[in-house]
Image (cartoon, helix red, strand yellow):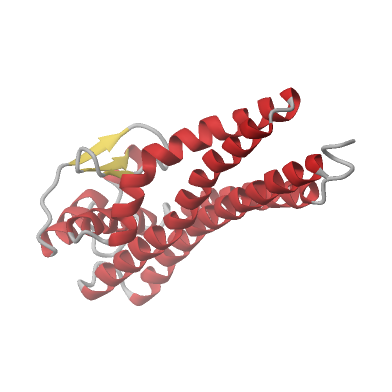
Length: 228
């Protein structure tokens, strides 16, 4: 009863979890819809990404990776990785995703400050995400206030990383849509489809950030409740 009955954040976290699942479903369904619609330009998504990068003077390897929607830019190896369903696809959805990942590579090349901070902060955030909750739980059951506080501090790093991710992702999508529009890779109608795919993906980051913030505030609440 201590964790549930006296925890006003528990229900909010359940609701946010539901929103996260809804966002994931939205991404999958929107992607599936526009993955079936071929772009009139007729290029493969890999070539679209390559041309966008070339336009901005960025020359990096573009690789095909296994999985569904596993597309990502690797800042350590400086490689743009497109999933098998996107790499050779000529769909509107694939254009949007490939351009988005190219946007991250352009951010890196231009030393976009939120991305540079996120890359530098990632090891700290990863440690905080994995270790923070365990330190907190051990501190609660062992009655060690220092461990509780240390767990909260570690988890705060994960929250900061999640918050910084939002402008990084929004900016990459903005760059993607701008590139697809300015070089006429997609028509106005097709561009709306690509934007719908990227907007759906953005919802997952918003939901993840909201979840992280709520969990952090909940940890603070539980710590203060235990001390009172």
